[in-house]
Structure formats: structure tokens, C-alpha cells
Image 1 (spheres, rainbow, N blue to C red):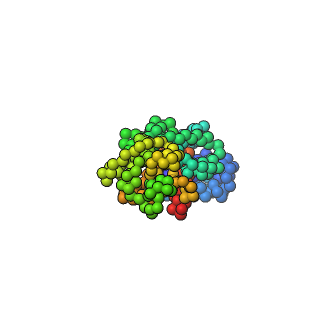
Image 2: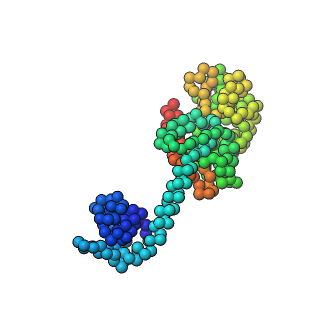
Image 3: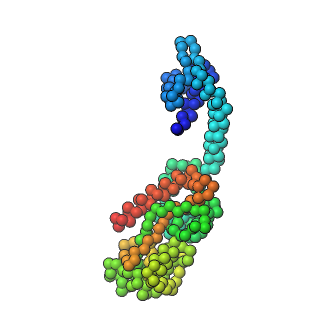
Length: 306
């Protein structure tokens, strides 16, 4: 059975102490009809009559007296617990957020704008990092949440909640021999010098796991932590690459293009990291989590149309 609302219990105690609906309503700042309704709802919830009323007096029934006796020490303690919790929340209006550099421009602006508009008194601190670094920071409690690509994390107190599966696409110059094809297999792409992602990144993990399952060897000639460096090397004719769709060159890029990668299709899973220890996600982290999910849905819809 669920507990009655606190306002109903407070109304009961006010009438029980004042022995008057008029006095109790004045003390609580409620109209007498509103106070009477709270008492009626409480009596209906409990299935008992708490007061006997006459034109001259209000008296507690035996059930009402028993409830008053038991509730008297509990209600102040409950109010105190709620007030302490509220004060703690008011004194800790901060939010520590981590995000992949490759996802920052895509997700962060809209999520931050919406969050700050709704919670202007919360101080938000943002830092970027690689996926393995973000997993460590959330595990250590140095971040309230982070947006990162998936990595195995059984040894960490981190919960990963997927928000998008971003497909890889082949990336090369427009004058490359593969540029005229509508789709390219991984085997075809890896016949050329391949520019990959650093170890410890979700991109590297997704590619390595997929290629391992097909016994396809990956020979990288260069490895970078930022997609801008990968794109720069491809532009300079140092090789080809594979990037998540959101980080591929735009359709109007004069030098680079991207095409669908198949056999097998590979996805980088992006998600939100939160600490699974010490009670889990904080209040403001939950609110920001919802804004990131909203931004992801908008981004996904835009990518599907492009």
C-alpha cells in the first residue's frame, strides 16, 4: 500500500493540534475547503474516520488519536530529512561532463543550450578525452557523466547506455580508384594503406573486433586520436580510412568523399557513461542525460535524411 501524500498528513496534524479547521487552515495558509478536502482524502486512503465534527468542536476519534500519537515524532523527522536533502542539492549545483572530441560539436551545443536555459544556476564544466580516459574518469567519480564510444568495462563501476549506433563509411580522396563505387567492402578498402584510430578508442575497438570476427587483417600505416588529423592525412594522399558517419567529410567537400562500407557493416556505439556506484546518477546528471538523448535523436534524424 502506498503512503499518503505528506500534505495530507500535515493537514491532519494541523487540525489535530488546533482542534479547529479554521485555525488549522490559517496556520497552513490554506482555505478551509482545501483543508477539508485533504482530510477527506486521507480518511478515504486509510479507510477510517479521524475526526468527529460538530458546529462547536472538532474531536479526534480513537483512530485519529492513535495516528496523531504515532505521527507526532515522525513528521518533523521527515520534514528535516527533506530539508537537508534540498539544502545539499542547492549547495551542489555543479555538473562535471566529459565527451569525446569527435562527438562534442555534434551533441554538446544543443544539449548545453537547452540545459542552461532550464537550469541557469547550475555550473557546468566540460572536458574532452578519449573513450578509455572518459571511462576511467567516470569510474573514479571525477565526472558525473560522459558521452563516449563503447569499450569493455567489466572492471569499472560504469554503466553504458547506448544512444546511437553510428555506421562506418570508407573515406578517401575523390580521385581515388574506389571513389566511383556506391559501396566498398572492408577487404577492398584494406588493400590500400590504412590510416586508423589510436588504441584505447571506441573507434579502434569496434573496427578491431569486427575484423577479428572475419579474420581480416588490418595493417595501419598511421594512427591518430583526432579525426581532423585522419582527414588531413587522407587529403595528403597518405592512405585511406574508415570513419563513423557523423565524422565523415560533408557531401560538398572538394577533396574527400565517403561511401558505404559493407561486408561486414560495422558500427561505433555511442552512449552515456554514468557511475554505477554510490547511488548512481545525480539529479542534474539525469537532467543533462535527457538533453543528450534529445540531441542524439535530432542528430540521428538529420543523418538519416542526408
